[in-house]
Length: 375
Image 1 (tube, rainbow, N blue to C red):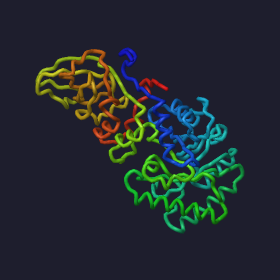
Image 2 (tube, rainbow, N blue to C red):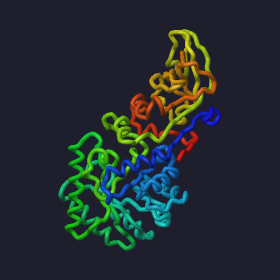
Image 3 (tube, helix red, strand yellow):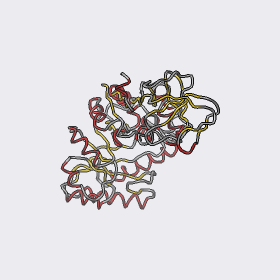
Image 4 (cartoon, helix red, strand yellow):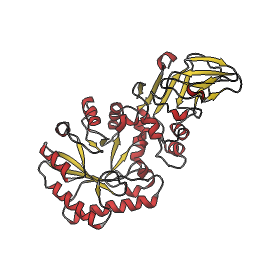
């Protein structure tokens, strides 16, 4: 790739790597277990439609999105495979959801009734097994019984087909005891519904961390999110190194180019607020990206990039559209390639430096950065 192709910044996304990641993940589950590829938040910043098509080609049985709008984007792109809206649907737009053939997450009789009146369709029941986010509360026997009775009423509604039931692990990457507790809670609901005569075909609770650490929880389907992009679930020990040994690699590279190089003297400051003052003469390069592109201000005076094989620290406050780095000794010139995420600096590295997680690093990459895909 030439410098001119990189411009301000470019995300290089290797869909072949993404497909391999899905296939490796599939090899970790049994042959009868379905795989949902989660492409919410613009495919974790990688591009929702392109990643959706790549996932389907790699054998994903279903796609997962957070919102109806995301599902509509996939349908407009031409994807016909099943799509589950994992998040809650709110207010208007239910008719469009039905017309698009999107599968809806349901956790109340009220939501199900509105969906039924709009024409209905397939739904997945959401159980809150301890995340305390959304889902039927089942934290005690009374709540469990009430939830099951409400689910039975949903099953009796016209035009409604309960295809699946699911929950979500809060700490499958770090807390096996709580994960076991959640799994038992979820299974209690399934057993009670079976006793009441309701069999739901697709049961799923395992996310990426579950697939890696708790194979006993895989059930009828697993949801592969961060794993399909080659990123490690939050607290996975050794993170990216562990995944690489399994053949799961990052699908994304983030590059820019040097906009200008200048020499500053001792006592001169760099950037807004004068948060960096040079102690000696140094070479400073300006990179034409900033927090408007997803370069967090938390990386000010903390982060680094790679230029000509050298680790170049970010100095001064990250601006909206630009940031500066110390390139002393890197022989940097205008137009040199700059690696922001890639060889020498991983999404996990960036996340640690900005006090965040790799999920936020990837999903925070702005739409104004060009995506370039390789199959």
